[in-house]
Image (cartoon, rainbow, N blue to C red; front, top):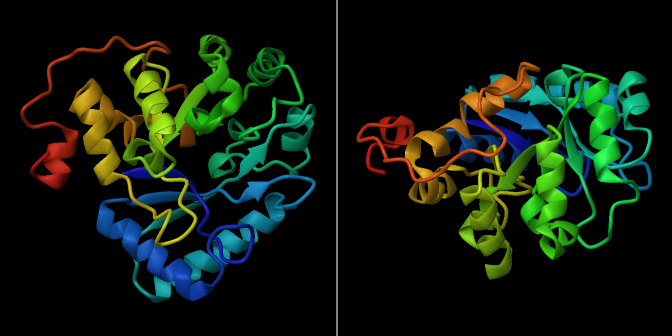
Length: 265
């Protein structure tokens, strides 16, 4: 599986704080079935100045650590970039890292409780015009979208992608976030499942259990794409081959992606 949203880089934001914790974090991810992981520290001018050179250096350092400990996890650079008016310019000058440093795929963070400081439809249009694919991180936890789901539907219609968090599916963030997660997923508005892991206890790097739950909602084939082919396409800077609003209700295959990996789902 591929996890495109994690906070594994030690001491760089509010995620993992030490090298020892990063090692345990990586081992937990591998045990869960994750083979590729994007390090996405917060990138926000007012608090976390994690521009591209910093992220590339920290990823290089942690890759060396994982190699020494023989942990088979492919670590990829990226960032969770807080929304702001000049995102295109920030990507061009290296202040806003893209996923896999591909300069095409941007993981966007909105405030959980405050309305966005820019018009989202216009921002998505600008990014798409510049050849950049925006992915909205954890929309199920964004109050602005919870208050009016049509706001989120519109940015997806305009060509953005959506990433749900495994903890939301599992109920870590409360029943409201879980219900909204199911609503968005069942209506074809979510394309990627990621952990948004910050530590090894309360917010661990695990996808398997949440993927199994999602398989019960939309089928194992669709759930499997959310942790395999779709994130792989986004990391390659390519549009995933799935419709923005995917029909639901398909029959679950007997030996699907998840059951081949995990055996019993």
